[in-house]
Image (cartoon, rainbow, N blue to C red; front, side, top):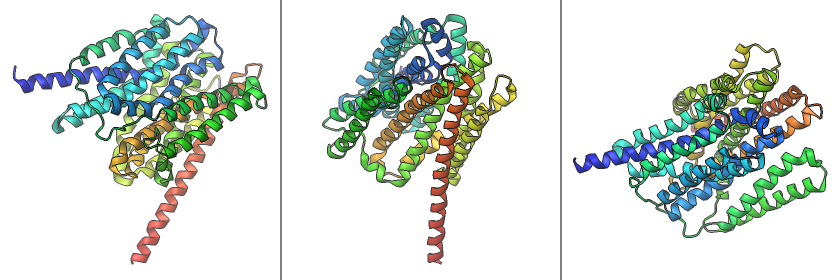
Length: 469
């Protein structure tokens, strides 16, 4: 066989392995939600305990995404990819065999750390491996696998739980990640960042990895401990102090984990706000909706999965269209439309009851999918468009770190609001509606900020045109 043909075959087999690993990381973000009711039933967990199954995963991503990117540049992307695969497989096995909610939460934390390595290395390795004529197609297939993972997660989770039980959601990862590793082994070349930092910001990583859990713990346990208790005040105060020290350290070190200079850029700040608010919204909604569909509407795991499909399927369908519209009219109008749809969805969901017509439920969830699709891509494009090319990787890392922090905070705060409004009597719909009002307020606030910035930008352009005339 011709040498070029052999090399091409090796590249595409390696892409298949990387795409499987990246797909598993993305599907793990949405597949677990439909398993929550079954996990609660078998392990005897309350809502406040079950939310940590998702929270710790997102929290680990938040703390480790930028760190994983730095380590990949420093130690090698292939090395970190392989380490991420092995750790993810081991953590999935541990989660699938967990005998208690505490053990499951611990393994989910490890899964999140591993997924940070899978997310940050996959696209860089693929871009490095393929020549110019094939790179766009290869990256398109990789991102399609990611989108497929997000889209089919709820359905796959529902079907797996209904047929094999909730443990299959985690155990199925083990043979799949083994297959991905086998496809990559011997076919992925080592690569590093061209401007890899000579030092790793250990202090920044430790501060962020300590501050976030303290903050989430204070919010998540505040209602149980008492909002004015010493435990809540001490944990929340420690989180605030650690975050302030983190900001101070990041402004001083030569190769910071998170470049604080980016946040003096107003356009980058707006794009990051959109990313943060989106993640806050969908992570909270994705946790509460399966509980509503299961507990209030009496749907089984497979039915819950199918009912959540309008969100992810519509998001996957709208995303490319939103990208094309953003290319023509700019990202700001598309982001405004996205948050308008999220606000409509939150308002609609807040009116859900035990007898709400299914067509209204599906329409409200589809609105959420439209909003998600309008925001996800354009917010990333907006963040990258306002920084010079040499800062693109740093900007991407900072933007996605805030995205993941928003997801973790959204889940924790919405759960705390849900618990407080439900009260001791367990009035589920009172808590559900209060959490959705929170998401509605967030959507409207973000929408107002974006509209104000858009109005200001148009005014500045009109003034400039008038002066030129």
